[in-house]
Length: 204
Image (cartoon, rainbow, N blue to C red; front, top):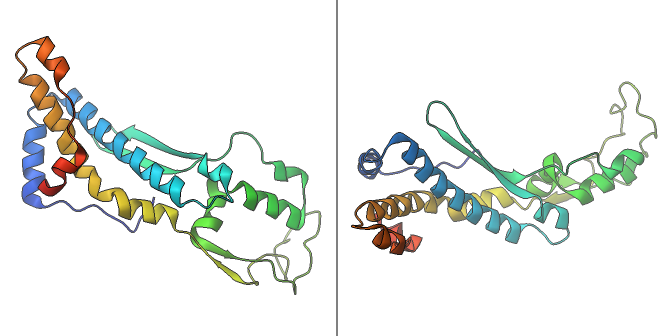
């Protein structure tokens, strides 16, 4: 997602959250935070899918998240467009035809065109050679001289729309685990349900 966006938590709230988290074993702490971040990732993916133009169906279906727990107990989560497995259909095409196929697939690194914008192929440019040799990008063979097409900034919109839910999801998981731990029997514990995340939004 966008590297320009960051989530800042009030220091007092952060200390209270950390103290609450420390009441549980380390393994359980990791599990609770991973559940919270997993739900946040699903929300962000839903916004990205809604914001991705319908002309990129492959991009809509390729949105995924990846989570990793580092040995230092830092949980990393990344959300974006994955590359379609296998080779691109554009490998059999050349020049403008190949670029058109790449843009139409619109997944993986090619989503940069949709996300950040691009320039169309100028009619004043010569058609690229069918065989790329050394220095094939020199001269006027490359794109970038035509009309500018504004990017959709899907990842940034999704981050702005959902980043405020990260801490409420953490509080919700801690609240759920605490109420389960306080249950007097297994039957009562099974009746415990997670509360609506909006209940905890005002606590951040």
